[in-house]
Image (cartoon, rainbow, N blue to C red):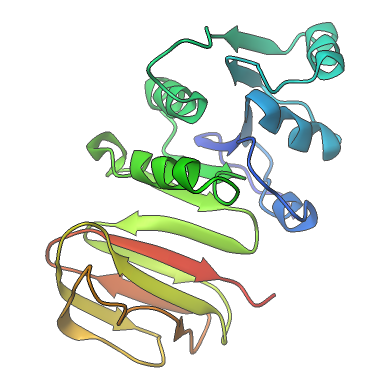
Length: 218
């Protein structure tokens, strides 16, 4: 079932993506599909075309680029020698275009340095008012500064990881092991592997930054 959301963009990155089928379920009518360099191959494999391809294009297959040009797809090519990563450029573009909801696909896994850098990009204060999540249809990861809800199913795993500093006043609802205004320390793993009891969990905190990782059971 497709839904209309003209302010939402799905950004396909060139990271590992073991299964395309869960991703297909993320795509809704009205979504803008943006390909970051070699992430183009995932959109093409879904029998779709991106609205835009951007990056230094060092991972974009020659045949795919020709196909995109023939179809009239907009391509923004950048030099290989630049200060920003291709994903950083894509996030800048979506901010300039006014998208309010972003789903970033195939941005985690593979090289550890790239995964950590990609996660760090989401801590940009300019993204704090947006709904921005890494998501491959099975796992999603996002940052919480004040409050957030997690739609899911009973048995899904939710981990709360303080990012860099102490997270104070953390409270949860809908998880097997609840927190009641407690502190989570970045040097401890207390928030790992909690379990959803129903179809939604809620998280609030007073200060700090929490990385939420949600693993869907189905």
